[in-house]
Image (cartoon, rainbow, N blue to C red; front, side, top):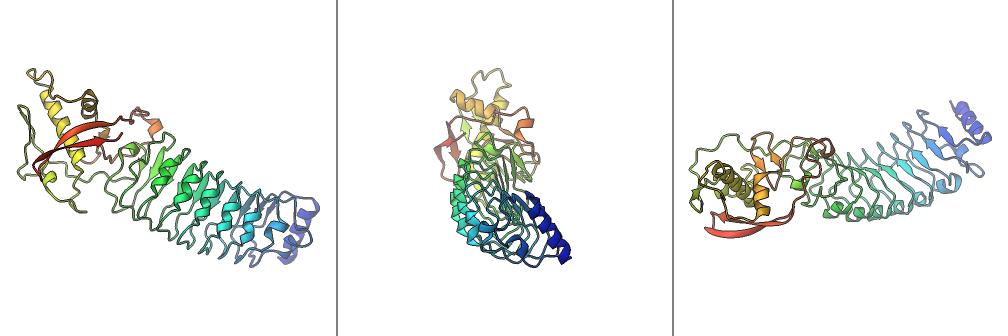
Length: 366
């Protein structure tokens, strides 16, 4: 096996190969033949998947300075040397399925890096210097021990695909909403309790995976038809028998859902007051609109009437209309007739707060 490896590397040096495949070689250490003399100055792509490597050489940047792609998937590498920052031409780095506990901040010096894969390691945090990778398009940090993502990640202006499944994330940095080219965001099987309200404003973001987040109860309306892996709002399809509260809108009495008088908890699934108010106005408008006596059901601004006439969608479990928080049934936006329709202007509406018996004005940010 050693003689065969030596022959493969010798031939690659003699013929100045740009690609070298050393996958499945049972390597316990980095081959010294690659580092002898001047190394392999012409090598651009090195494949060393599924070996037993535990470390990378400190002089990697000196012996393989022109590397464009480095694939080290499925090894036992625990540390990335600081010299990784000197591989100025490196565009793809795959360190998935290793034993990494820390990523050195020098990774931020690899300014040409476009694809970084760190899945299935033991990472508890990521360096803020990742935000210096302005050319980064793909970042995969799934199956680690991350509780947060770097706030400076929003500086990766070319980032298109961010995958962080199976971590311990409780929230996402709001700065992620600033990523202009983000197309796919995958946060499945975490501990998310909420998502930034601005997430999804960008038309570039088309796919959001948030399945298996047990404590995630609601989604921002901008994510309607972009979310894949959501379980609906969970409300019963039938109205509760509990006596409902009834605010009066002119001569029209409309029942308020019984949920409005409860204090929210994880099990009660109480919706925000603004969502409930929109549903009540929608129901009242639908009912009075059928009666010829009501030519103008409510004295509301046209912008608000447009909102309550046409909800963002309907919950696929209880079929109720959804206005501010949406639990959609998973369809990419570009493949639906609603493409481009989800944008809403800012409107104000008056909602009846039964707990304090007062009228309050809320803003719907669309």
